[in-house]
Length: 428
Image 1 (cartoon, rainbow, N blue to C red):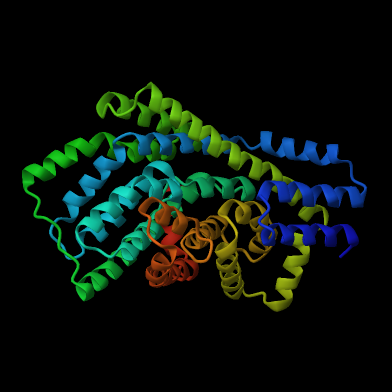
Image 2 (cartoon, helix red, strand yellow):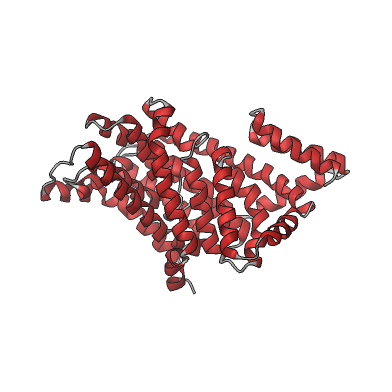
């Protein structure tokens, strides 16, 4: 520990207590450190720019953001919801199951939990509200099911993790398939128990004609993940190029098939994409500065040595990391955790022989749980905002669901086969 680094840590902690915007706080912390250390700011800026421009995979992020905006603005979400409703049919707590199934399908298009909650969320919550479901439960299951978005491929957080760790993005995407299905299954079991206890209504009987009609309407939307993942795993396109294809295909079906996007809405889509990309880019750039300081002070080596002093057992290490990241997820956003804290533990992950793909899927699910966890879970605020439901009501309902998600987290943590079976089967 030295004075520049103590000042750096002090400012880093203060930015959270004083509610300073994260990028501004990062820039301040790094600038103070460099000035006290006698390092030229131009040197650090050059390192940041070099890191950003050498990360080709980062280009995929704005492309998937654009695709998500297109899906949400077009009628794609409507078609997915009606298709999921047709599949579930007459079942106790049917709309809760529809909520989860729709999230699973939509996750194969956008790779974003917030896109899922904000796109499908309002329709799901309003439909459940009309049928007598409690508002808190409706919002909570919408938030919890949205965590599937970045687990089931594609996934924006996995793209960021791949950039940091060097793990195969294709293997990471494949590794998320079974955990994504496990989350859906676990949540649907929970819904079944609650639906019977509270006597939530059953779904409507869907005739064969209605099912066929819903399926035909949804086919263009359902082809999105098929084209996307098929292109990646066949080797025809890279994940970055797949992001471009997803964006283009989403635009084509929204304009030509569903006729739901015009020039005005396209302008709004581009504006929202630029705004979201700008926000993420600023955080990424600033976090590279933070990472420079962390690397310059050899913090990963210090942390690794400290953890090795506690345990050399990889299972105990995974337990400690899961607990630490679950706590971090309650207070800090996903991008900050990914870009600042993951590089600190990666040396330890490698030294203990933990597979980078397995660890990546585990840690992404861990961070997604944070989005649904009080007090600062982003999905809680999204569902509260779109439904006008008090936050306290949602928190009361979501805590058992967070428990379900944590159970799945520990299953995939200690039974790696749930993550690694498909990657080992298909990635050589």
